[in-house]
Length: 397
Image (tube, rainbow, N blue to C red; front, side, top):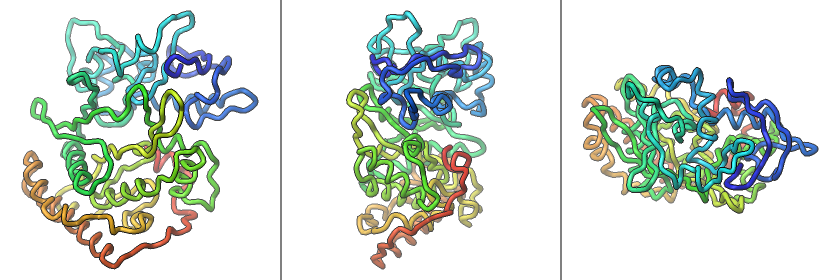
């Protein structure tokens, strides 16, 4: 189902959660983006890939203890337990013969219990049977997280990873930098729960607009070997009728250079789409920027700038920055005292680490300023061979 509209008739295996068979299609145009239809038959493998992406990764921290408490053997069976509902789009599954409606079941407007979310955070209520009907069943990614309702709005609470648990702070820092530079983004705040830092952000989707990842969008057209990943994504957006996304995309690339983001994979950016009309709204506000500022590195490694990875268009940030073109829009004055913000909000980090982050960040800002002062506006290169052919392995997640 997509809202109250039947999309396809499926058979789903109870033990594995996989789509076993597709019996028929009601509205092919409402199938998930990137699922092709040939001679009236959808690509089952592509639909299963989309469906599998709704499940919690089994290697998320603490997930095995959580599913043991929840009484299931694998995270793949959790989405069907919540009718496949998520807080990112309007897709769900309605059991055969059920008269259930979108208005009755969706998590955007209906309350939900936090049993699954609590378990995913390592908190187990002994002696109670957990309620598995939760949007937490369909949260992807490898960091611990849960959905909460605060003042009637849906918020995502997300933790960090050992040994430094720095990602929540990085989300808040990236949000501050984007505020200062006027980059459209999802605002993140830093909160502390029981001594552990978390980031908190409001859901960027609602029942009228959904998030479609760049990975899904790039499955709508075949990529030629002579076309760069950057160009392919831009071309796919234009072909879908989403317009020119280059300005928003380039601002995201500049942000990722400044914060040394190491995990801007193709499921960490995308477009927003109207769930009723299927018309494209535009480039989604920037989100998920936590794997940055040396989040998993020692203070010395942060200072040395070693081992910094880059995604999704190039393997290092200097090369990827060349895709961003003109830098005249960057207001460096607004970043003049960003180190003060880092020192004040990063007090849960040790002093050496805070200072290393500040020095490395200032170095990248200064290098960016030097390039901007030269009035650099390089044309985008033909980047044939700039990524491995196995995009899924390196860039999707």
